[in-house]
Length: 221
Image (cartoon, rainbow, N blue to C red; front, side):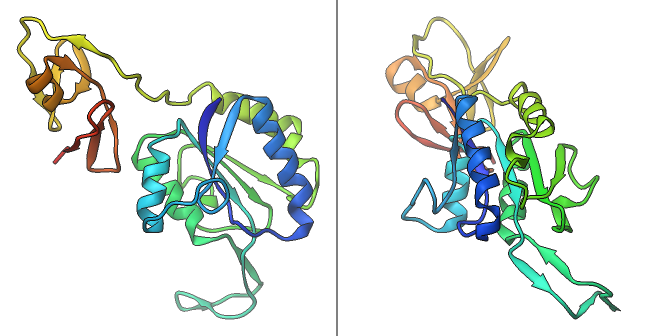
């Protein structure tokens, strides 16, 4: 099973349950394990840090834009709105932004009344689909099934740990880690210097990496 990040509200209207259940079943049938803060994962740290940690364990992210906020009157900048607006949870935008910064491929699907931010065409250069989430079959429709297959083909595999004894190599420093050209993988300097081992590092937030062996935190600044 591949871990993928699923950005969705923990509460959705009962009108949307059938479609969501079908979509979750579709993910499982594709050997994808959807993970969501507050639904599958319950961290003991701040929500933002928890999102970053979880995204670093995933190969891609799916954003589901469900209606969460309904605005019937007000202004956008200095202009009164002439019709009601439906907005998603703000965490959709936060999680999509972090996933994009980490280089994870995104699949964005939103209810047909939800707009603004990442749900506007052209904001992000990723797959973007608008569906009627009240239709219980949207999650298994040919369009979404096809979109999922395309998105799966560009998932970003997590680096596998490698363990090899150092030889007569001179490392170069890149983003706080060691590389051994022409090998551009990023290795843990602590394991290399102290144990004669070449151990891969993985992303740990936007500005850090972590060793897959000793779990040392390495600043990329």
